[in-house]
Image 1: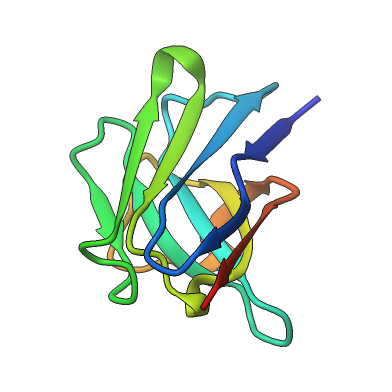
Image 2: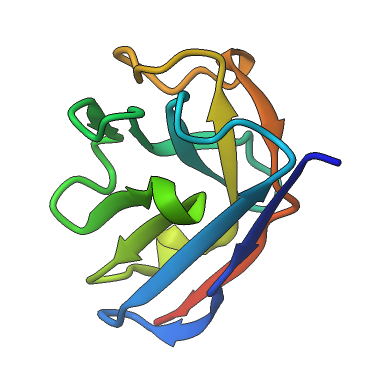
Length: 126
């Protein structure tokens, strides 16, 4: 059974930090790029960051560059997102997903991801 399970979300004040985790099971993790997406109420799901299988390919959306850091531990089948200097506009449900390739490419197109987690809620208060 394929599972991607996110954790680490919560309520934080603006300027604060959170670290999200995603643990994978039932699928091949270390041969594929992995990414974080988010979806705010009433908005489309948008890409946040992607990391390639070897960690040499990393991509960030402009909205989070310099504030968020994506990492992975292939030995633990785990993906992480360190989020610093959080803003109210970062409030959303955050999802991890597996890309259909080992590298990230130049964008975060949802159609190129085949497995998704259920999400973890991040709420940033002003």
